[in-house]
Length: 139
Image (cartoon, rainbow, N blue to C red; front, side):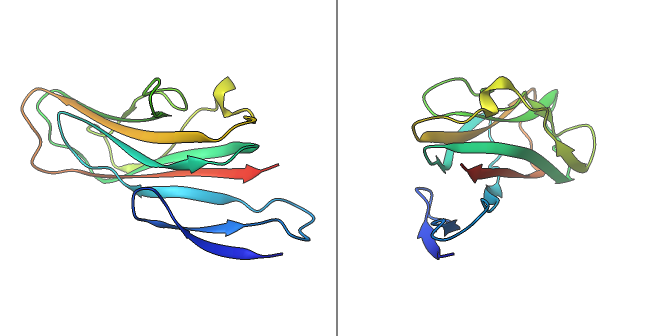
């Protein structure tokens, strides 16, 4: 089994299992912090061809103090901001929130560019922290 350290499009790093000699797929992760802003969408990485999402988590150690609402969603770059997960409230409570699986977690024959969107309404936030983890395997 071989591993490579690759740089993502956003400047982060991921450990890549090239599956050479592996008998089972290794769970890999696209993860990072969410940047607050009225509506801020960031490209966070690429799911390679034949990848299947196995879980998505949004972790909120510090709730947003936006005036009305604050949410985080995981989407498809150039497509729907909620393609992979519904908008998760990051204003109401701290915690580690598992996102419900959707039909879009199925294996895709081509690579998919993944984005994370933070959206808030009302008075702009001055505090709040959220992280995401998109766990997947390559079949």
